[in-house]
Length: 241
Image (cartoon, rainbow, N blue to C red; front, side, top):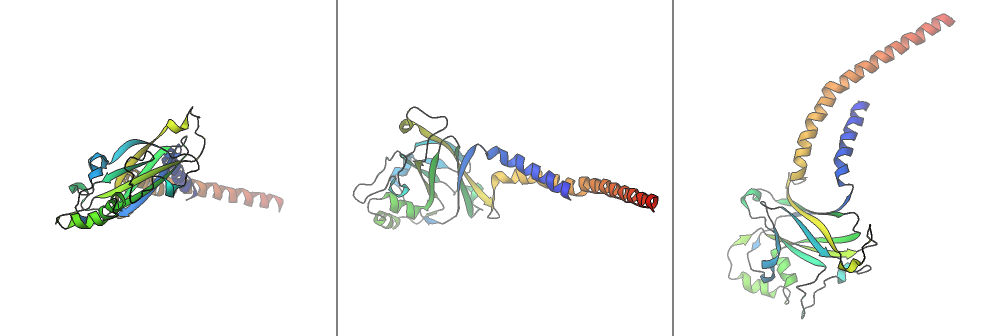
C-alpha cells in the first residue's frame, strides 16, 4: 500500500499547488434569522449571493504599524462611513438555492506579494446595525417594531493593515490598493465548501482505482521479487554448505 500512499500524496500536492502564490483568510459562520430592517449605508455595498458568490475587490491598507482595533474605529458622535481601509459586504443568504444550508464559509484570497493583514468579521443584521448606527443599536430596536418579516441576510466587515514591504516594491505604498477575491460558499454537511465537491468527486475514483487496480499489481510484483530473492538466498546457502 506504500505506492498507493505516494500516489495519493502526489495528487494532494497538485491540488495544493494552486494556492501557493496566494494568502487566504477564512471564516465559517452559521445562519441566524433577524427582523428585516433597513441599513441606509448598505445601499452602496457589494452583494454576494447564490447568483454571484465571488467578487474581485480593492481596498487601501492602513499604514504599517497600525493597530487593527484602531483601524476605522467608530465613535458614537462621529461614525465613520467612508473609511478607506475597510469595506462592508452584504451576504444575501435568502435565495432559494441556499435556503437549505445553515452554515457558510467566507474566504478572502490575495496575492502573496501584497504583505497585508486582513481582519474578516461576519455579523447578523442586528449586530451590523448596532455597529453602523451612531446610537449603537437603538435605531434597530425602533425600526424592528414596524417589521414582521425576517431575513437570513448577514454582513461582512473587512479591514486591512499593511504588514511589510511589497514584492516587487511599489513607488508609493500609500496609494497602492490591495486586490483580493472574496468568495461566499455554502458548507455541505456543515464542513465541505461547494468548490471542494468537484475535487472530491475526482479523487474518489482515483483512490478506488489506486486501491483495487494499481495496488494489487504492485503488491503482486513485489511479492514475486521477494520470492525470487528468497530463492537466491537459499541457493547461495546451499553452495556454501
